[in-house]
Amino acid sequence: QVQLVESGGGLVQAGGSLRLSCAASGSIFSINLMGWYRQAPGKQRELVATITSGGSTNYADSVKGRFTISRDNTKNTVYLQMNSLKPEDTAVYYCRLRINAYYDYWGQGTQVTVSS
Image 1: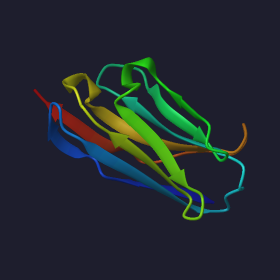
Image 2: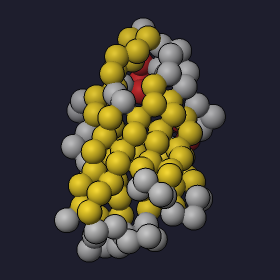
Image 3: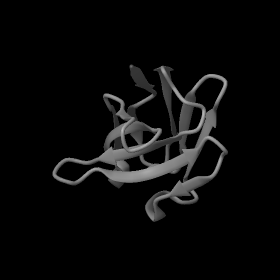
């Protein structure tokens, strides 16, 4: 069983920064994809950023240049550094760990609120 524990959300003013962390525990294969998704009220969940175990990254256009995803494979932890936050970044942020179609896990979510 895999567990994902997120931390680092909160309330910040526009232009500020936050750093999210997600620690994975349990039966984790070394080759996997980790990432962050978000869901704002009334909207569908959307990709924010992903990173492979080899370090390849992918970002949503809306966060390119402002957010940075990274991971520490020794700690099975993924991070999301969020700078220059905007009110439209307000959402619940979810961590994801995907090994394959059968082993695909989500965290419980952490709230990020950006005030204008």
